Image (cartoon, rainbow, N blue to C red; front, side, top):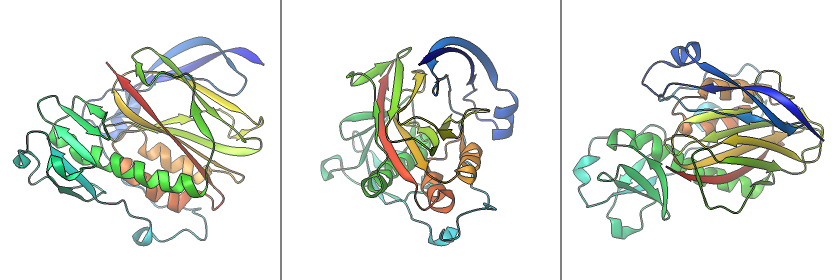
Amino acid sequence: MRRASRLTGCKLSCCRISASALRRFAVVAALTLALPAQGGVRLLAPGDEMAPITSFRDARPDAPAAAKAPKLGTVRVAVEGGDARLVAGLAPYAAPFEVVASSAGPDLIFDPGAHQARSKGEVVAYDIDENDLPAVIDRTALAESLAKLMATRPQPIRLSGATTVRRKGDKVEVQLEDMRGRSLVLFAVNGNGAVQALYPIAADPRVINDAAFAWTFQIREPFGTDLIVAVSATQPLTEFERGLKELSHNRAAGQILQLISLAAPADARIGVVALSSAP
């Protein structure tokens, strides 16, 4: 069953201002679209800062202490052209990294001439410089960690269509299965390390009533390879949702693994799919 819904999407400035300022100066645009009964469209652009996770009042009892939460792995970074001086002195955010030669099988290649970062042959982030690398490195390490989580407790997830690289203005549908009676939080981690909450927003239902769930959004800047992440559980995801909202619109990829460890229920399932886009 489909219905016409009037939804709001946020277009947020990408300049270096505080998270609170980003929230205050959000520009709201209204859309009228034909959508599934549970689903919708969001037009979102990320902010530009990293935010720490605050304490969780109702973190699950078996959650590890922050000091014992899973750590992101070390990322091997190479510089196109071999001038490692460009990244010398860069301090990591959450994920440690080491600089290696391009011939040494790096996890991430930074191309200063093209202002791009690549991983496994795909452009992860466009329009970046060396100062953006720590957040991109966090996103790269997070992708590996989420893949391991998904292997042990998978949430079925896929993207509509067979197009490999999406373009600005394309609409993409995220499709989830086996969702009846499960709570859902859906978010994106952009190639530049920024986190975007996608679902639920405002009064969106927290529990999905149907076996299948679909959510549609539109491609816009920043381009690169985003991680679309679904966290579902039979229990409420209240604390996880609250923590994600604190991180949303910040370059906080390095905080996601800790958030899952501290605030997601023990039965939480993880679904991850990569979405590549280009100008």
